[in-house]
Image 1 (spheres, rainbow, N blue to C red):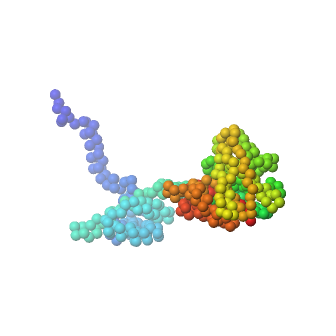
Image 2 (image 1 turned 60 degrees about the horizontal axis):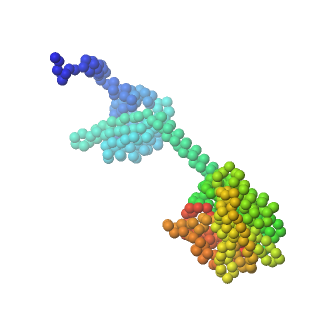
Image 3 (image 1 turned 30 degrees about the vertical axis):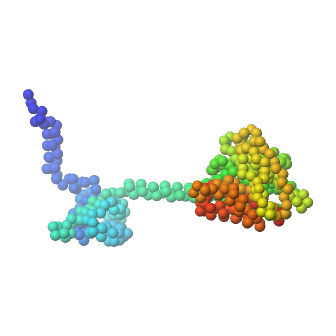
Length: 399
């Protein structure tokens, strides 16, 4: 019986013999035809040895390089500067450099992107003796990096176009400034959430129904983006159209609710709608709110109270339970409409809230612009200038 411990495979013996014959036949094959370029230089960079692969990469013959050229001379002008200021000093200090991206100028003048590894060998006394360098063709990698850069540039350009589109759409949803209304002082303010690169759902509108008859609307559509913008535009235009035939804000909002329920979107919105009518020198406000924070009236004496009938969100229930509240206004009274971005402005776990808003209004009620700008500035300061939600404001004052 044969002892398996000493049973050597005939295949193993044959392979060993093949590799030994191959190495004995051409011991320099691994160096000359390596998958990367090899060259050896003196410490000052003069080439003393190169392999066939390096010659194939550069197009030079060995006789044109060995003893006649320095490695740095084969680089681009920028590469030569980098070699002198970084490559050579690092090699001297650390004894090696790895994965350095350079460009070699081929004999035909074409640039070849390469990655370079190099080691500096020293003698027993520590003196530099020779530099051994490996040069890898990085053409495919460089093209990959360039494609990544091009993709990044395309993405940045696309983002810039998207931001421009957002800005344009937002401007179509928010009037540039409230109209001049005889006998009333009107101002508005709007601030998108974050850096303003996404379309929000907050909106306001001020428009005339007839002589001495005006409508003021403020609303907030659920969510953000293009779909929210569509619902915002739909709500605004429906309010304007319905106001021609319906006299009560609750009736107008009921029509908006019906339109939203029929729309294919599942988004809902909140709206506070006010109708201002002038009789002689006096003004009357009729207010209805559909799930929206109630408007505030600030009297000349500094009293602040909520006004408006409160109902359900629009676009959710067939009947929103909307009611109206008629309020007679006196000279010096102010009206303030706002979205929940004011009340929900946050500083840590603290909210700006209704109490802060009511406390701030009397001191700002000298003009409509003072109220709108003052409350907006106050909420921005409260949350350190970083808005977590859109903010829309409309202020109306009877001089």
